[in-house]
Image 1 (cartoon, rainbow, N blue to C red):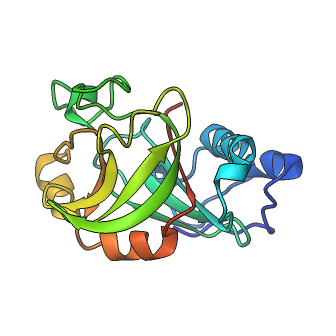
Image 2 (cartoon, rainbow, N blue to C red):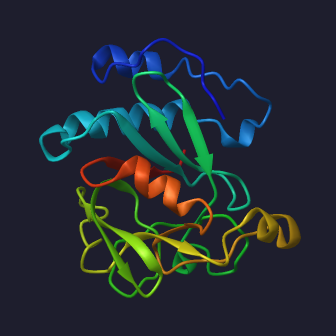
Length: 199
C-alpha cells in the first residue's frame, strides 16, 4: 500500500503529520493506524540515541487480525508504506482466533511483546535467515533473552490466511511469510526501529 503525503519529519511536527496518513487503495485493513503511528514516532524520539538509522521504521499493528497485512515498513521521507503479513505469539492468542488478546514480556510466555525494538544483526538459525531484536522498553526488554527475532515461517502466507482465515502462531517472534522476508531484512537491516502495539 502506498501513502501519498509530504515528507514526514521525525520531530514534533512529524507527530502531528502522522495523523494525516491516507491510503491510496481500498485495503483499509493494511493502513497505518494514526494513533499507533504517533506512538511509533514518539518511541523513535524517545530512543533516538539508540536508533542510528531513522530513514524507515516498521510498525506492527496487532489491533488487526492475523489474516490482515499488519506489519508495515514506512519510509519517513516519502510516507510510502509497504505492508506484510506477520504472525503473533501463541501465548498472545491461546484459542487461536487470529486476534492478539494480550502482550507479555515474560520468559516462557510464548507471547508477543509490545513496545520499541532496535533491529540487530542478521544471522542464519533454526528458521533460516533471521534478524535479532533488542527490546528498548520495560514491556519488551527480555527480547534478546527470549530469542525474539524476525524470521520467515511456512505458516505465514496469503494462502494460509485465505484457506484458514488465520495465520499460524509463533512463540513471540515476528514471523513473516518466507517470500516477504528478504525484502523486509534488506529494507530494515540493523539499527532501525520496529514498534509493536495495538489500539
